[in-house]
Length: 114
Length: 115
Image (cartoon, rainbow over all chains, first blue to last red; front, side, top):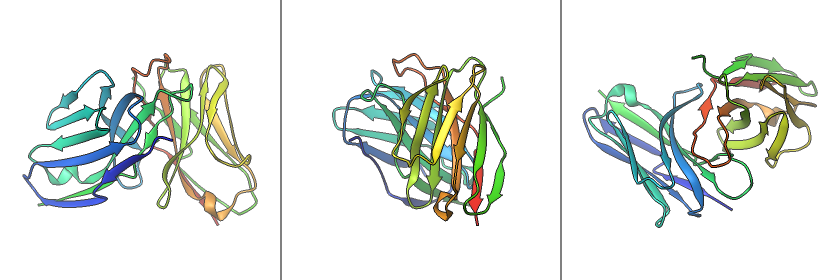
């Protein structure tokens, strides 16, 4: 059974700092891995989608990498801002199961202090 | 283009009642899936529909059911509500191809409170 772990559960940094969020998974048989952002009480906003054949994706100040062999993904946020404060979730689509359901980690709650 | 629309945004129900939540996917998306989010369990998969057929179901009791209509809109129903059903219910749509190359787009969710 695929399990996704995100460490740390919470992170507090000063504004302007570069930071890395970690996501690990137990089974490398995945279609893709997606990073989401969730603001309190809101839905999920997709940040980056990495296909299993890709190693990384970039969007603005965000860069996500994927290493299937080690079962790890990282989300790098450059020059963090208070507006980046949110919970960041990684989710992957396993190839087994005959569907494309997502398996989520429990998230990292990020606080960027002005 | 319009995103994923979930209605209603908030619901308060009494134990024992039933509730129906609605989700309209992005135009052209035929795959709709539902997730329950609670502080203790995080995001858990409920079920997935494609072209009006349930393709997969998570580990939830039979009180949780759903369906999908020919226009891809989906509803989920929870009968005999329990306090533990209080959660944020999220719907996601995808342009499903079976190859996993497309990601999911989520709606804003329905916050269900059972009292």
